[in-house]
View (cartoon, rainbow, N blue to C red):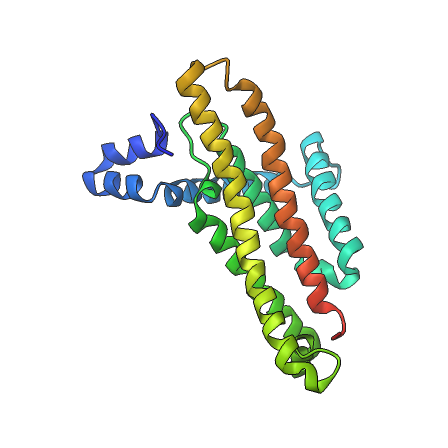
Length: 231
């Protein structure tokens, strides 16, 4: 969906025609870079003022981060703490990208399938890396089934299922965010640029949180499954 004004695209056009063309063709990349810079900046600010006597802001960050860590541990066990950084990063990054679509002049990178696919291609291969870390070569038993003569049946099913994880993570997030963008765009065109889209935009905050949490939850469950003993 084309937006009437995209702030970062407008800036890129003023810098040079080359950057303007790139921004038009790859708007999701431009806003992904913006989200990354914003997260880096927030991370620096959040860690710069850490003290033994926490401030109100530090208390908020500690509650959020601590809650996410305990949630991961509840699903994966104590061993899951080592994968907290990647899981927390996935959640915060996706949530921020989703929220960008609610800001006038900004575009949510997760409304492009390339962005959601890139997130899925980080999580799913990492699942198998974790499996090999915990089980070594025996990890392949996850794909073989309980009886050796069932391997020709179970192996294709398992492989299809694991490839389907990539498709599921990609399409679910992309479809919901693109759908929200389309609904907001239609309301802008039909009923004005200010009042009619407000209920949808308010609902968009909830949708952004839910979609980020679903991606985070499924990623955590995939990691937990890879750490379990072969079935």
